[in-house]
Image (cartoon, rainbow, N blue to C red; front, side, top):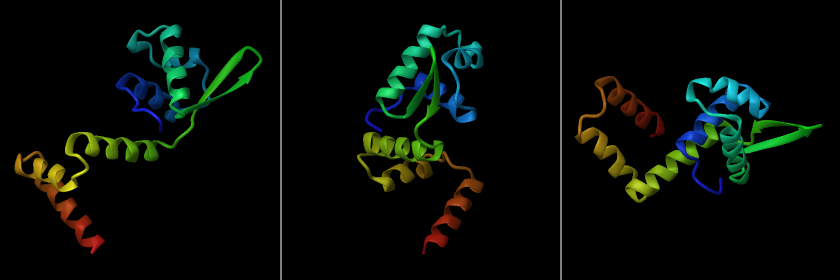
Length: 120
């Protein structure tokens, strides 16, 4: 992924991950609650194409858009980017921040402990 995906672009990606291929009008329909018009959606789609996370095929005058990456791959990339930007790549600092500030529930802490045990 060449550039970070904005929050608005991620909303468009979420639609395409749910169902694709879709035309820009299909995306507009599915995002009616956002109040975006077709021009706005096309702008987001073009940005996502440039970032190589969306691809398209042309069928006559219609363009059909699909995700070019899997959602799980996107999440891994975004998570790594967040850790690099905010914690300078230091995973220990990330975990310490959540644990020390009691941002994790007891159930979440148990889950993390089980994950760590499995990794041993």
